[in-house]
Image (tube, rainbow, N blue to C red):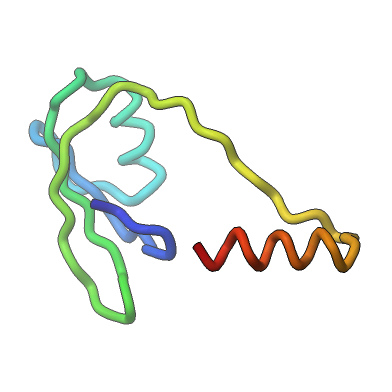
Length: 83
Protein backbone atom coordinates (compact mmCIF):
# COMPACT_ATOMS: atom_id res chain seq x y z
CA UNK A 1 0.00 0.00 0.00
CA UNK A 2 1.23 3.46 -0.87
CA UNK A 3 1.59 5.69 2.18
CA UNK A 4 1.57 9.43 2.67
CA UNK A 5 5.06 10.72 2.03
CA UNK A 6 6.01 8.00 -0.48
CA UNK A 7 7.72 9.28 -3.62
CA UNK A 8 6.51 7.25 -6.59
CA UNK A 9 9.35 6.49 -9.00
CA UNK A 10 7.70 4.21 -11.55
CA UNK A 11 4.94 1.69 -11.98
CA UNK A 12 3.80 -1.28 -14.01
CA UNK A 13 0.37 -2.72 -14.72
CA UNK A 14 -0.03 -6.49 -14.95
CA UNK A 15 -0.09 -6.37 -18.73
CA UNK A 16 2.41 -3.59 -19.40
CA UNK A 17 6.00 -2.48 -19.25
CA UNK A 18 7.47 -0.39 -16.48
CA UNK A 19 6.60 3.27 -16.97
CA UNK A 20 7.50 6.55 -15.31
CA UNK A 21 4.95 7.98 -12.88
CA UNK A 22 3.06 10.15 -15.36
CA UNK A 23 2.80 7.42 -18.00
CA UNK A 24 1.73 4.87 -15.37
CA UNK A 25 -1.08 7.14 -14.14
CA UNK A 26 -2.28 7.68 -17.71
CA UNK A 27 -2.32 3.91 -18.29
CA UNK A 28 -4.05 3.23 -14.96
CA UNK A 29 -6.97 5.44 -16.00
CA UNK A 30 -7.90 2.84 -18.64
CA UNK A 31 -7.79 -0.43 -16.67
CA UNK A 32 -10.39 -2.64 -15.05
CA UNK A 33 -11.25 -2.88 -11.37
CA UNK A 34 -9.11 -5.54 -9.64
CA UNK A 35 -6.33 -5.38 -12.28
CA UNK A 36 -2.97 -5.63 -10.54
CA UNK A 37 -0.09 -3.18 -10.49
CA UNK A 38 3.39 -2.72 -9.06
CA UNK A 39 4.88 0.58 -7.96
CA UNK A 40 8.42 1.42 -7.00
CA UNK A 41 8.53 4.11 -4.34
CA UNK A 42 11.01 5.76 -2.03
CA UNK A 43 9.90 5.46 1.60
CA UNK A 44 12.15 6.53 4.46
CA UNK A 45 15.06 6.84 2.02
CA UNK A 46 14.66 3.21 0.85
CA UNK A 47 13.45 2.06 -2.56
CA UNK A 48 10.67 -0.52 -2.16
CA UNK A 49 8.19 -2.33 -4.40
CA UNK A 50 4.47 -2.01 -3.63
CA UNK A 51 2.00 -4.50 -5.13
CA UNK A 52 -1.71 -3.77 -5.29
CA UNK A 53 -4.87 -3.86 -7.34
CA UNK A 54 -7.05 -1.18 -8.88
CA UNK A 55 -10.06 -0.30 -6.74
CA UNK A 56 -13.18 1.70 -7.60
CA UNK A 57 -12.95 5.45 -7.18
CA UNK A 58 -13.39 6.37 -3.57
CA UNK A 59 -14.86 9.65 -2.45
CA UNK A 60 -12.55 11.53 -0.15
CA UNK A 61 -12.00 15.05 1.05
CA UNK A 62 -8.80 17.01 0.69
CA UNK A 63 -7.91 19.65 3.22
CA UNK A 64 -5.59 22.53 2.53
CA UNK A 65 -4.06 24.59 5.32
CA UNK A 66 -5.07 28.23 5.10
CA UNK A 67 -2.17 30.68 5.03
CA UNK A 68 -3.62 32.88 7.75
CA UNK A 69 -5.24 31.18 10.72
CA UNK A 70 -6.19 32.29 14.19
CA UNK A 71 -4.43 30.84 17.23
CA UNK A 72 -7.64 28.92 18.04
CA UNK A 73 -7.69 27.39 14.55
CA UNK A 74 -4.01 26.45 14.86
CA UNK A 75 -4.68 24.75 18.23
CA UNK A 76 -7.60 22.82 16.74
CA UNK A 77 -5.49 21.74 13.76
CA UNK A 78 -2.64 20.62 16.03
CA UNK A 79 -5.07 18.60 18.17
CA UNK A 80 -6.70 17.04 15.11
CA UNK A 81 -3.35 16.13 13.51
CA UNK A 82 -2.09 14.47 16.70
CA UNK A 83 -4.88 11.86 16.70
